[in-house]
Each structure stands twice: as structure tokens, then as C-alpha cells.
Length: 123
Image (cartoon, rainbow, N blue to C red; front, side):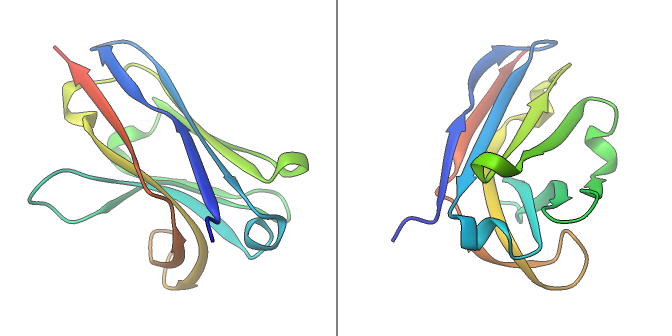
């Protein structure tokens, strides 16, 4: 059963923008947090941005994307999005949506993962 459906991604030149979206079931969306992680070959998956899906929608960002990326939520549609501006070649990675934080910080352990969407930034 597919619980997270990702869209967006693709290829862009440095300085450009892309938007990723992730739609969850209502049950999954309402658990607590959702986040975006990214992974490049040979490295561990790393948190990029996270958002609390209840309350005031607290957000967290990796230092490397602060001021360039914005995570947002659309609770009516059980969707989170990641607006990525001023993209750099080092942002190139497979981006994964995650839902339901079960341990640790907002970039800790999540229960449910999407299949990933590739983002490629050329110089």
C-alpha cells in the first residue's frame, strides 16, 4: 500500500528553482511530523527540512539549505511541499519524503518513506 506519493524534481541549472510535493493518507499525515531527506551515492541519507503537521507547523532546516529552501504544508490535501530556490550543484541528490517521526529530532527516525525523486543541478 503506497502511503506517500512524491512529485516534482528534475533537472535545473545552478541558481534555478524546483518544487517537490508529497501527499500522504490522512492517517499518515496527521501522525506528527513529515520531512524531506536527501541522499547521494556513497553517503548516508540526511535531513533537509521537516514540518510538524499539527499545531503551528513548526519547521526545521538543515544549515546547508536555510534561506534557500522552504517547507510548507497543505493540511486540506494531506500534502507537504519543498520549494527549493537558488539551487546549487551540491543539492543534487535523491530526495525522499518521510512521515511519522518515531524517534529523535525532527531529522531522526521516521516510519514511512516515499520512493524518492531525483533532483539534479548542473553548473
